[in-house]
Image (tube, rainbow, N blue to C red; front, side, top):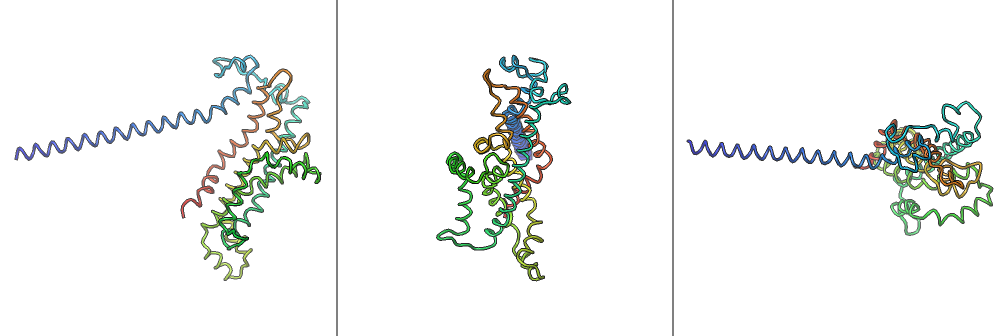
Length: 312
């Protein structure tokens, strides 16, 4: 009995040590994961912090590389003052502020207009690829979908000369309409791919039941399919708007005065005395703020829409 009791006690001790070792390894792994996430968050958020802090730096603080406010430097309104947005210039007449507001308005109109138009065109196209079988030469539905996506591989600089010639002949240079059209073409493949996955997750039987009750194909699409696919549409719209908001190449190529956007204005903050870092940072901060608000308030729609077709 004593030998049996000793063996059982030894086995219990070994089991306890293994459990403690496993628990320790789990804690170490958890600490390592959190440490990696903290480091990555710092790497990802530091450019935003640098941009925001540079908005409140003077030229000396920028050139000397001061980073910590209230420790290495005292914040100043220089960046916002250069745009006429500081407290001491906000209620004064400012041509720079008027220009900034016009560029901001151009970005808003071009981004929202292109995203809405891409959804309007891309949703029916994606629905057709998800529900009907097409044949275009040797291409089938999957080939057509990949053809749309392959347009993103083409470098934008290849399209510079054709777009310049086309827009000049159509009198669309330096117009908001011109930006909306080119931005729509830019984000349309992404919208089609996201919405196609959304529509493929919706059972066909729902549409068939609606058509049995008297709905047409378009009626079933508008009354049954679209409300179910709404999260995907919201995600596609937001993603398209963000891509259009940050676009620089076509905005710099096809605009000169009236239709310039914020990215072009950011890149133009140079002069004979060098780069105006505080003005560039102030404009960049103003351009980042709407995207940050979108990410905060619409995160659940973005995640829900982008992951709806992940599990079938």
